[in-house]
Image (cartoon, rainbow, N blue to C red; front, side):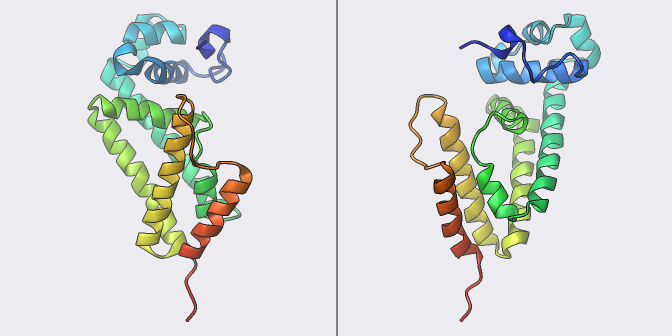
Length: 196
């Protein structure tokens, strides 16, 4: 696989701050090589800075990991605003965005998951906090915690299956526009109170 770095990463324009370029480089390496391959030297090289330049912005690998977690929280906060303001509602938004599209939020989530898998407590706490935030928004939207949990679990399943698709695994979920519409119709039955 050819990395974006080799062809000029459009996600990392020169106008981006050095800190942001370093975080994106770290994220890329976590995605490609895992936590062990994302060394400070490799991150500096990928970001186009010296190791001293990297250490000026992030004094250690722990500080770099903390920066990535902060970036994930920032991207999640932006996404939650969009979710709550979505014209078709938070459930529709959550389900339609539960397909890995390699967005900055998707990439930050997966990179942070790699840190959590390497026993980084901050990363694990961040992922748990984000899931709680999504669940709270969906609970508010549907009015029932059990229904909200089921919707979030459906979202998790869609995301997992779409992420696995990139690893050569066939996706059993129909993520076409029609498939998502059909799924939302089913979920709407669960989230709409019945009138007796």
